[in-house]
Image (cartoon, rainbow, N blue to C red):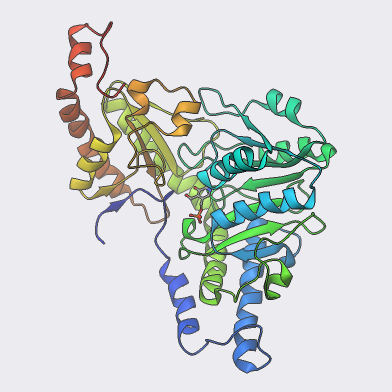
Length: 401
Ligand code: PLP
């Protein structure tokens, strides 16, 4: 597809090197890694390599701490279910109100259908977690704390290592959904107090349908998928060998590019941000500008609808997102915008631009060229904007309010 792709938090393109690495495993190298013959051994060797590549990206102490799963959502679900099963006497879960639905929907289900108590930590207007509230909720009744490392909508980074250390004295499992952090922030799990971590291949230029659950050696763990003895009995099912091998290569490349992400890509993101703020009135950055993944810019344009902005950007071949990809289609502001108490008049107009190492300066220049006109056109047909211009905002209810 041609166009300018700035929706990399939704998914990324498969790196051509990753694809090349995978291709032989679709044809000649089709053995089952559990088999005792050369066909199996060849694939088994490549999987050992892939596991080490992921281990290295995550800074894990042992490669056996890496379990391949089908996606980030599976890893998240497995982590929580594992902790609850391993510690049946503990009936409480701590999470945050800005997690991905892979955590929030499961927690809602566990609360409403299975009687668990779920504590959802609040965030402030910049999306920062309330650590005092967290400290007060920690107790030996808590089975698992699950907090995302970085938020998918705003890029806000949470103090995960600190939060893991705070949880440690209470003996609960500390899990982090690092799907949006891996490859963007340096991660070193060895020596940290993090027990489990989820990541997903398709956010780091590997294919869709492959994920990882890191489980620290010695951490309490119960498998969710039972059956064969794959993944040392921790996740049954014949391995998705091609994708695992692709993920390994993607992990190796991601590790090489973490610095690029925090220099070159960050500079492009900052150029986009400055260009928009300079040219357009009544818009602001959401999330924590000081602690944000380098590729993410979430910006709220007041008095217009995000969906309309997206459609107009699409006419120029520019792909971005409003809310998270999983919730777009709904006209309600996302749960993340609501949690930060972004006013209705701005929350509806929030747009997420997410860059990758494939983003070029000319892509950013193109967005900066077209976006002022798009916003002006949409505001010219926004009743609320019209009222605002006339100074008649009091008592006016916007259509989307
Ligand atoms: N967690 C976060 C923070 C995400 O952004 C996503 C996907 O957008 C997921 C979990 C789910 O990952 P997957 O699509 O691999 O199931």
